[in-house]
Image 1 (tube, rainbow, N blue to C red):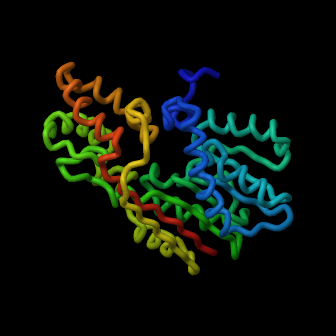
Image 2: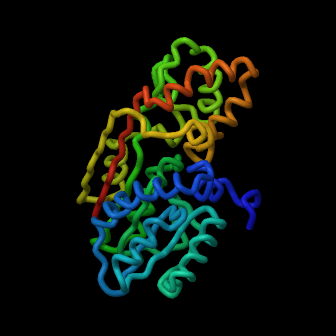
Length: 291
């Protein structure tokens, strides 16, 4: 299957989120493994109990569960058939296919699973793409067995967005603010900060959704960081797409900037990126709940 034939979810997860740079991909995975382990730390499976990984993507959490719980059975679910096929090929290569099931399903519609049929539900960075978050929590609750556990991780993008007018991606663009605003407008038209699922919630909304769904034992860990940006090359900065639904910075500049504007933008922003003269603001939430 060629990249052009893949859906946007598969293209992003397997290529665009690290700009096609294999070293960058490995660095990203190294950062994701502790998240995987923390999600799974809330799950205890014995024997052939079943874990449903909702929005499994490339299988980070699901394969981690197969390794941590040697007898468990894992259901990979996603809205991307391309990613499900990718995960299934990996399962065959790892000789764990007999413990896996691959199902096309969205977080807010798990009707392919019977009520009370799952021992644990996990998700990572899934609800940021789901408008009907309350419905998703209701589905998580419905499919879980009594005493079943939900363990999720979500970025709280509302913490960092929208940025002040004089900042772009954490960098001060005051001298070229009108040019930077043209690029900002590309992203805001695709994902309006006030209404897009990426930014229409915070950690309190996740707790409220869990409680309304029926969970009575709920926990939250919120992690906030304000720090200089990670070290990155200019090429990586402009060629990495932040999520599957948006263009890379390089693509956005090409869409809306005249050659002179692009030159001015790069002349100002590139030195800031390469010298890490910016501010990275992030918040993430781990939520776990028992039925």
